[in-house]
Length: 385
Ligand code: NDP
Image 1 (cartoon, rainbow, N blue to C red):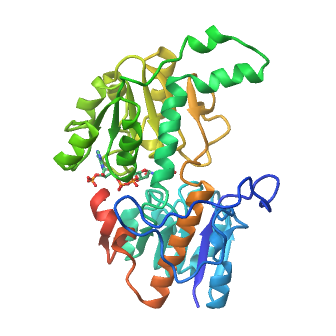
Image 2 (cartoon, helix red, strand yellow; image 1 turned 45 degrees about the vertical axis):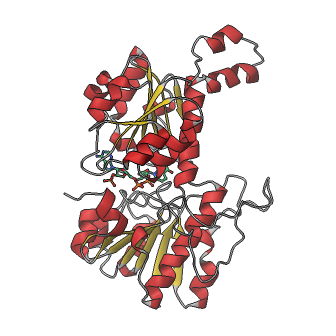
Image 3 (cartoon, protein in one colour; image 1 turned 135 degrees about the horizontal axis):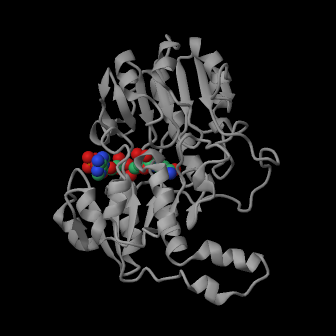
């Protein structure tokens, strides 16, 4: 019997939902690279239900009880004496998610001597200290691809919302106004604009494919160049690094993981290299940008808009400047936790648990750290100090 500690966001203010606006979600069987969506032996939930909150418990409760495992689900993850801290001493598995991250620091590793497996229910394991995972021989796995398309859709939405000045225009209507000129004074079309992505992985590439239809000029930078045939098909211009790409772009979307190489990549100097009035969209990780440099650039007009759904820390304090800076289109960290995405990452979490407890290999695509080193997807996309 193992103890599994699962950290999830709180239920909605009105309580865990009992009905939904729609009767289900489309069934997706394969990702664009041909990999199958998660294939656990069974699931104990109906796709389209809320699974990512505490009461949803990622649909794992029955499975854990049937197999004699103790499942502790909590949203209490920060501050001295949090439930997470109190439960760690005998936990074998920790499940967390980027939206409400249980920051698995080196100190927490030190207090969890039985810890063997950390699962990110979603994508992006930077809230886990990967160096510490390597040192402690803890496996880290995430549900690769589970919400990549969800995020790509959010990116396209945010680019359009910023460039077309959607949110302020919507506000005029709610306030009873009909102020067309107020709305139009900051509204443009994206047609013909140069749009670049930092990284062309699963999300970056999905953003390219979705934007192609808008007749924009697409750019990217990545550590590995895409095949010439893909560049040709999408009309992509490759740049060797971010610094050489941003001066030509009207819009930049950040789609790389947070690791030592990308920490603070968009600092004052990088933002100064961008075109005056460029838009920056960041659904990757907040610490890839310098928080206060973004605020200053919006105030000065160097950036015409900033949108994203990633903050640091999460949840951010009430007075976080991104809540009130001008020309922002922020959401809480929601892009990858639509009900559609939840069904996939909950099933993927179950698949990883089944593999772990049954002694079967976890898909290589899901692995970030194994046997004391970066592995699988982690070896490809991350670096450790
Ligand atoms: P992928 O692993 O498919 O792609 C990441 C890409 O980033 C890879 O192509 C990698 O390059 C590239 N990369 C790594 N370092 C650099 C760098 N220094 N400069 C340029 N490119 C770099 O991941 P996804 O596309 O699925 O996800 C990307 C990130 O988005 C995640 O790590 C996560 O932080 C974030 N995310 C956010 C979500 C949200 O809800 N907002 C949900 C899901 C993910 P290569 O492999 O070629 O070396």
